[in-house]
Image (tube, rainbow, N blue to C red; front, side, top):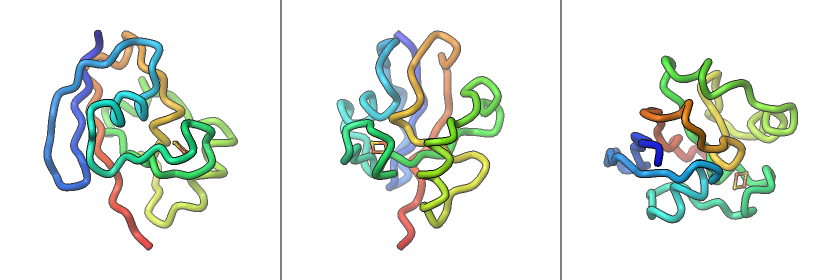
Amino acid sequence: MVAIHFTDITGCARELDAATGKSLMEVAVSNDVEGIEGTCGGACSCATCHVKIAAAWSAIAGEPSEEELDMLSCVPDADSTSRLACQLMVDERLDGLVVRVAEKLA
Ligand code: FES
């Protein structure tokens, strides 16, 4: 298991045990992380799994794909720390990851 430090949309921070091979979105949804919906089921087409990765983890988390960047370009508050949690697969490198749910801007 991999420890993920997740702060939800209300500011509540929790450490989640995440199984490798799951997406960060799946981990969040199965742990009822407030603010992560995963409406499209991980198809990179809804952005309801928008998260912000702590700066210290961005290189380890890796770069978003072109498809993910296209989706993020539709999100008003996306920035260089933004990722779609459905596109981030949990592996051992992410043990200790610090991430928070992005604010929902209209
Ligand atoms: S769950 Fe829809 S884009 Fe991530």
